[in-house]
Figure 1 (spheres, rainbow, N blue to C red):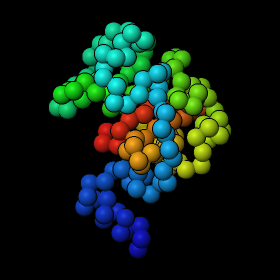
Figure 2: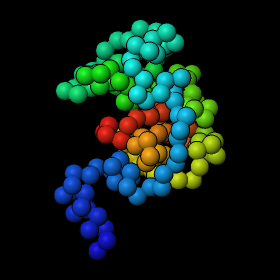
Figure 3: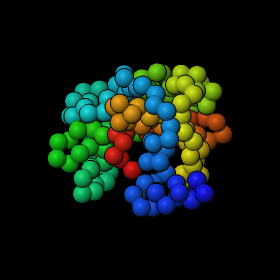
Length: 159
């Protein structure tokens, strides 16, 4: 019964898996979160002195996706160039605000960020995510064999 009700609500209000987790997971304050020194809300050009020039990777009606010379990928609003997503993967050596880098273990992530996380799967990866409901942001760690292979930090409105 409860599962059916949740399913109906999700369909009716177009709530996807990430959005549903947003409502049922306890908030984790992420007041100083960043990846590689870039914070959400930073204007695209402000990160250039540290990360180098950008190349456009993709574009939608609302966002432009860029990759800095350093390998950090970001999405920025077309209208303001405000960064709304930060993403690292592969051999990138950047870290989160609490020092988690690619290759870190699941246990270390939980130790630094706490127990209020959600789990989901996408593209064959296990994912744990932390939500700061006050800031309306999510921080996700994509895992393979319990090691971080991708880190994504974005505003709630990104899908």
